[in-house]
Image 1 (cartoon, rainbow over the protein chains, first blue to last red):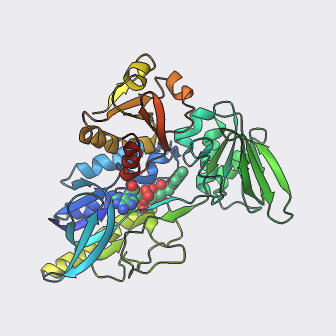
Image 2: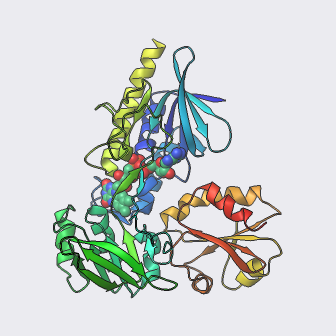
Image 3: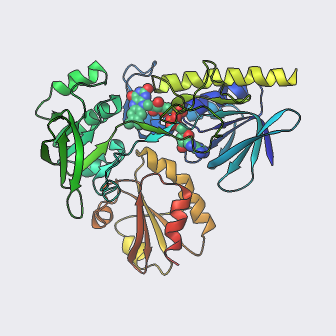
Length: 312
Length: 105
Ligand SMILES: Cc1cc2nc3c(=O)[nH]c(=O)nc-3n(C[C@H](O)[C@H](O)[C@H](O)COP(=O)(O)OP(=O)(O)OC[C@H]3O[C@@H](n4cnc5c(N)ncnc54)[C@H](O)[C@@H]3O)c2cc1C
């Protein structure tokens, strides 16, 4: 079994930064990722609010920069999916990670930085139209809708930002949002409101059903108060209604909030000594690249303090 | 490594291949495509001689994706004897891809 001082699970911004801090502090560190490094940043078209990039930066470019920075130090990169973990007593606490394939990995300290995935709409046609109209990545699939009409569901920054991205490619974008007001940042809203012929706001509505054969042709929305239905002719439906935490593998003893995000103290420490969490996986207000990177540094610093204490 | 396939050789490499073929429709600017790429390469090694693994860059080949109604990438399609056996969209786990491959045997 491979053994490390510290293992970081998930190579998004939080995990990459945590690994960077740990390895620079001289600890033998592994970074486990099931896909390739970058996390959600890889699926973001343009990031305009990460300090240091006044002209904005493409998601994949930022992901590559993050990854190259971690690779400038001897971080042990492992590819694989962590399916469960447990803690044992072996000269003090030891954490064992079970992998989908291959050998277990053990470490004195573990940082969980597995981020979040898309929250699905939860209507019955969703699965059927996946890849046939329903998408969770405007950057990936937007090009297939060149010149067509599409809808975006959601009212937060991700929805607004991706609606703006789509508006440059498609004929028309409808933004379907269940409330009257938007949570998203004012600057996106101002841009959107300045082009009413290109982007139409469909507020206080939820997606009721989807229709079309074999591909999506029609999105039926329902007004949340009146119950009145309206058909929107759209060939694409891009879903940005929030996140679900990737925390299935984490020990059941860890505290979670009602949506399943992991609860830590302000130093990223969970209830189990030696297990820390960082980034979007945590219960917190602001889920962004900058806060993920910050959490990663804090979690690594806590882990370093913990490891030094063990070695003392 | 997976074989790069374009519109000109798609029929020969995919539809007329004697082996079952896994095709990955992708593009260089697509994050989730890059996320699954290492899994596709792993599979091409593990199934060498049993499954042909091909990649179609949708920026360079447009006819093949539109023939199969591709509207999202990455889309993975499993072919056997020129017929579609199964397909999935998005950055799925390796397990899902292995299940799809199994359907061709
Ligand atoms: C469309 C969109 C637009 C956005 N726009 C912005 C923006 O403009 N500005 C901004 O600051 N933020 C933006 N964000 C949010 C930002 O991307 C996230 O807050 C940030 O990526 C969180 O980083 P993370 O490291 O916590 O998690 P993630 O980025 O989610 O990374 C987690 C990683 O862990 C891996 N993983 C998960 N489970 C396992 C497992 N069991 N085993 C192994 N690996 C695993 C995943 O594959 C992933 O690579 C956007 C997000 C989206 C989806």
